[in-house]
Image (cartoon, rainbow, N blue to C red; front, side, top):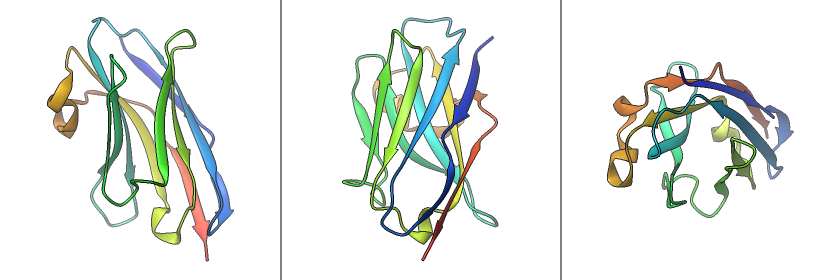
Amino acid sequence: QVQLAESGGGSVHAGGSLKLSCVVSGLPFADYCLGWFRQAPGQARERVATIETGGRTTYADSVKGRFAISKDDAANTVYLRMNSLQPEDTAMYYCAAAAGFSGSWCLRQLLYTSWGQGTQVTVSS
């Protein structure tokens, strides 16, 4: 059973930075996608960034150049570094795993079947 646990959320002023962490355990396959998603109140959940086994990354257009996803395989942890945060980045952030997938499959939110409990990020103007 895949388990994910996020941490690192908080409240910052616009222009500030945060780094989210997600400890992942129980991935059953060598290939996987790990992703950060977010959901603001009243809005659909959206993909923020993904990283696959080999380290290839993708980003939503709204966060390109500001956010960076990375992973530490030895620590079983995936990170999301968020710089130049804006009020529109306010949301609950979730990490998720799509076991057994890679490449362009990582863009498909429906393939992410294991989710963490989320961590709140609030950015004030």
